[in-house]
Length: 292
Image (cartoon, rainbow, N blue to C red; front, side, top):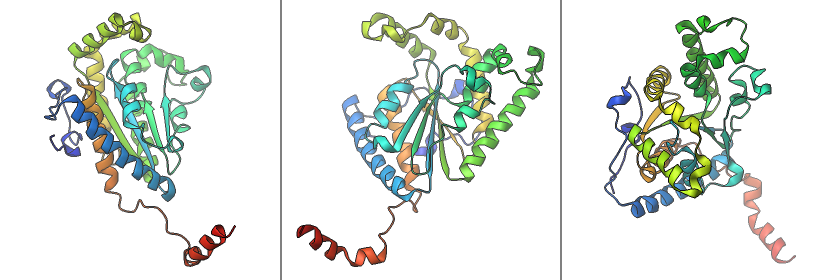
């Protein structure tokens, strides 16, 4: 199977999504990819255990993508080997009444992982510069003091919001959070196929909503907003990765491998040493237990 490098998918300069591939060949069949994914996830779990004991870093994994991009199944498969106490997944839906009484970053800030834990955001704070940009009328529901009409939701408004997001990520990165941002890059044709499967397979019917078709008509607008958001916010401390998502097993493997390879570079993440006094008396403690 092909060896991949994280930098292949990391976005370090401006991109055009139209020119960015939605497929990637690992030169392996599905079974081989899934076997390799399992091995990577087990290694990732070992790092997570050490990180939990180490207690100085948190990991925030942000996953964005169009409807049917495979966010839910990727989270299920990539993180299933991790200790349940060490990973927390948050799926952000339409803001609640309580959330709308706070600034738009509040609900994301309070969901951030504690040091020693992985936090996975299924849809993220970027919804506030994606869905709201495609549907600017949603901003009116935030009851902002400087927004009185849609005329106020202008270029200056979005510039300020991107600055706020960059500052938010910079702040948490400087305080020990390792940030990964994955854009699952799906083709329009593959989305069509997946929506049809939701209609054709009875077990998938519950996932379908007529609203999916309404949003699909805005595909080009969403792509433009994603491209702009990614280009404005991919920073060394909070990089975006564009993951080819037309094949789900491939996308899962790439994400897991990027996580593993990147976290391996943190050489200080290791389980703490026992107190020397305790370590010197391990034999005595063992005998005490054996004679109990």
